[in-house]
Image 1 (cartoon, helix red, strand yellow):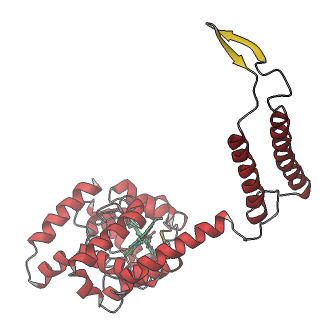
Image 2 (tube, protein in one colour):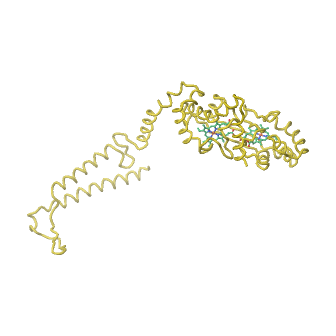
Image 3 (cartoon, protein in one colour):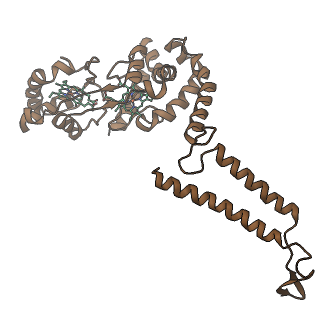
Length: 320
Ligand code: HEC
Ligand code: HEC
């Protein structure tokens, strides 16, 4: 606040209080006896006359008390322009204190899970209820309430991971965030090259494409894509290059969407949560994300892939 405004506000505030004092003294002066006992204001309704009498004393004292209260308040708290008040109270400080006290109460809630391993926590019902709430508040905007993702935001409830699905890898994805870089390759490929390699990628995930396009596309793939997406298209977790052979697509699996990914590139960014949520919450969230796909992992371990098939069908429906 500029000092001009500060003075302006202070003077108006004090002038108002002085005006109140003056007004009270003025009305208090006319005690009965000075004027005629029954002087009227001249107002009359249905035979009732309004008498001109001073305010009762107890009423005046209430006014004086409020004025004294106001003055003490203005000395202790900020109210006069940029004057901070003797107590140094501020709205921001009060808010910070409140956040701190909530954090103090809540932090132990998360801290008691810090020593448990992520797979252990994923089986812990109470911890996972808390995890679900945290996920709803902090992650669902991008990844969806069920972690199923949407265009541009990966599904993290299945077993197809860009950066890895181990407890440690999931934890790192959340704590430090991730930045993926798929370079735009349209110019390097040219129109024909783009058609061919698109057909090849389309075919990689088990769908039909013209044979000769696929064959030429494969050569292009080997020279331009293999370094990142792997010889067989399984992806590379070190750089977040996704598996191109499954039917899990972050940016859509239609011919058009795949072509756009290749031509224009993609730069997905997972925001780091370390400073936003802190280590203990991230630990719990990692366990929650891990738990979202644990039923798929178990089925895989048991050699039963029917669950996975059901999940693929869902996936297919989402991508269509
Ligand atoms: C420098 C490494 C790199 C190269 C080279 C590269 N990619 Fe990628 N690609 C990535 C990364 C990383 C992503 C993930 C981008 C993201 O998540 O935002 C990706 C994403 C994609 C996607 C989108 C997948 C989805 O889930 O929607 C397609 C399709 C794709 N790449 C195809 C190709 C093809 C075809 C080539 C070769 C012509 C190629 N990429 C070359 C790193 C690379
Ligand atoms: C602003 C949107 C946004 C928010 C909020 C967000 N994410 Fe992400 N997240 C992304 C994007 C985009 C990616 C993909 C990055 C890439 O292209 O590699 C991602 C990737 C991930 C991955 C790695 C997935 C893989 O396949 O390896 C995990 C795990 C993850 N997020 C968990 C979370 C959790 C838990 C939260 C909540 C604390 C969260 N995300 C909040 C956008 C978001």
